[in-house]
Amino acid sequence: MRDFDLNSIVLFVTAGVIILFVIAQSVFFLRQAWRRARELGIEARVLRRVARSSVVFTIAPAIAIILGVITLSRFLGLPLPWLRLSVLGALTYELPAATSAAAALGVPVSEGVTDPKTYSTIAWVMTLGIMSGLIIVTLFLKKIQGGIQSLKKRDTRWGEIFLTALFMGMISAFLGMIFADITAGLKGWIPVFVMIISSLLMLICGFFVKVLKVKWMEDYALPISMLGAMALSIPITRLLG
Amino acid sequence: MKTSYSEKVHTWGRIWCSLALVMLMLFPAAASIYYNAWPDGMALLKGLMGVVPIFWTVGAIEAFTYSPMLGSGGSYLGFVTGNIANLKLPCALNAMEIAGVKPGTEEGELISTISIAVSSIVTTLIIIAGVLLLSWLQPILESELLAPAFANILPALFGALAVVFISKNWKIALAPLLFMLVLFIAVPSLAESVSVLVPVGAIIAIAAARVLYKKGYL
Image (cartoon, rainbow over all chains, first blue to last red; front, top):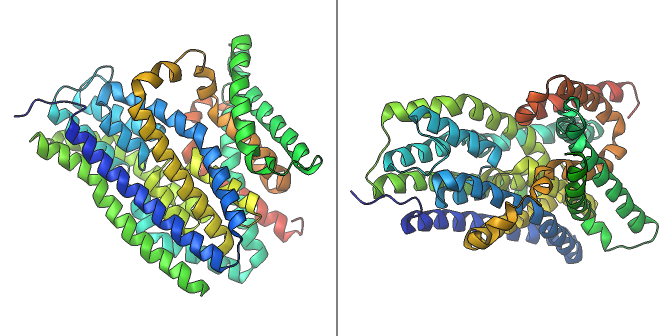
């Protein structure tokens, strides 16, 4: 049997091939949507703005994902976490999935896996365990979207309100979560203060865009507010933590 | 023309996503073959038992809740590339807002797809850069100085999003917001299962919106 290496070149290459596939899929959909948008008369200028603002917005959350790769890499080496967090997963799923698989096998998550069988079992559990969303989308998305469209056809206004309500439900759940620790004392309020600062920064951006007519800022208001609030969370945590 | 694009998206999406499902299995298969180390049936089953009941349910809920918001192309991409709630969905929402288009329309579908595609490509490239530069980046990213910034990424994101979207739709948002506030303050441990609560919030918002709409308040 080969010597087992969590960071073997074969594992890196396999992960790399799958990640290239996913990039290819993104490029494919990007080109198709761009072309169709141009056909519909949406200006290239607008599309470029959308693309630019998406790039800038993505940077901070993507860097946070690297942190997740680092966390999991102590236990699983680099290739598997690199793949799992680039494709399909989020740390909120991958970490518990890996932990649960490790617990079932009776291995600690605090040190690197040394047994190839343990490694392959964990890799299979993480892959098979977190698949249902993709399977359902592949099989049923057409039906789901058809349902939404027929809802809109019956009553356009209600169709719009329905989608807005979905968004509000999601935002409400995450906003509520921010308040989860407030009964734990001042420290528990830190996320709330960060949220408020982010909101205030967004309002200031809105003032610049709408009143002072600083048009370019409109595209970057969300990343500016987000990064500003993240930066200010550092002194806030020092003060209250 | 309209039907033809949306028809085509589903055909492309099904092909790409089916291939993606196969590709995803490639990694554990390659590891098993290369090291000649296939999992024991019982160990695999035990591992899966700890993961599947929760994550298959969450995945199913996410598919039904997020896909109407992401649009077709956006869903086919977002469910392959992941990180939907913390990255792809806010990105698409923001993009539609900037472009002045509505979700559920063809224009909204296209803008959402473009933003999710761009975001997916950028995320993947940043993670590649991160993996390549890991030894250099690790001490910076894991420094005590930056820890609070990464710990507060969701409040920083949703605070700004809330201003834009709740101010426009506060009547619809009021009921789910109050419910979630009370729920999370009463049961703080629920913070770990926020993705299960997204559809709960959505159902409350839809019910409240229905009542308001019927009474003519919207």
